[in-house]
Length: 77
Image (tube, rainbow, N blue to C red; front, side, top):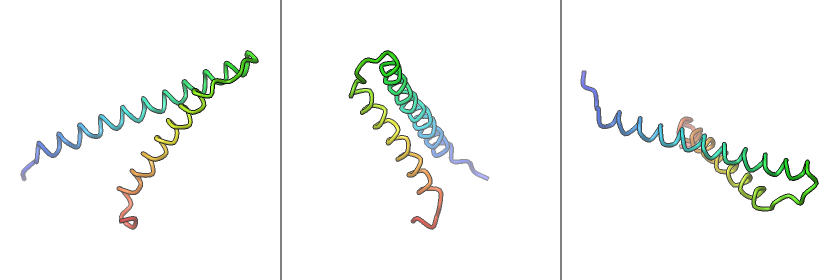
């Protein structure tokens, strides 16, 4: 039995980068939504940038999840 260590390392590195990256993008979206909610509670105008950042972050997370499902489910290939 032979283990392809370079392939294993490559998969581990890509998984780590995308796993941490996806969590960071989601956290940025939650932070932007929280700042928007604070502005609403304080009766201030909601920053349009926070809404846009949150929307883009959540859209990126959704796209990553859908791409992962595409890669996993063989009927989509």
